[in-house]
Image (tube, rainbow, N blue to C red; front, top):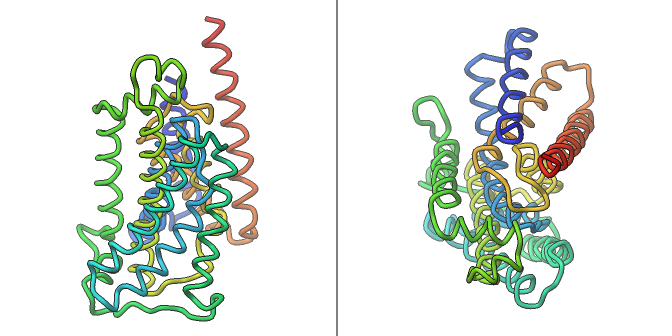
Length: 310
């Protein structure tokens, strides 16, 4: 229970403290900006949640996020459908390859996804002529409106993110596939003995992670109306941090889709507070986020040992 609601309680406390300390924190513009900037990381964290619940890790999502954005911007000249499907197809294919190598060949997720991270970044450089070419999105297209338009005061990417999290929570908690995800993360050998398709489940979660990273990159390109090549660096670590802060165990078998969303929001609130202070360098965002993650991991370890003792 503490793991499930601890991040939410911390988020509420942080929001209250920030609103009392800074007059501009609860303004509409600031909240809209935080929600929009959180949306892209949240979509990546959604896919990462499925991976980590199985006991895996995906280091390729940052590079896939950048690659998805560039492919979407390039494909936008051929229509909205191409702009969306191209990054999904390429990034999803990378996820499938990751899953196959991990599930069928028994390779370590860390090594496989690290190689995928470098490979995706290489493809990105090849597509953009070593980063010298930036593809732009026509602002008058339907694709651009996905990133630029608002609905009820929130950007369209925010609503897409909320819909995806609702779907993700339903899949993980209410479907047989979700049961397999938890079973594989809890005890892979026991899951196999119970008849769970361990290999197919692993392939599926890495595919989902790749698709989420590609979609997040595409939405980001629609928002920026360009495919920026330098984005995504370190995003995989942010996504992992958000998922773990949200209560998902790195060892697998336990986690919440809603917790990952709370983890993303908490990281963004911390970053926003540091920006509000103004006198602190942006590097403090990483320091604070890293320290907070360390505290959460220690707390998770302590709670896990206490539960085993009880």
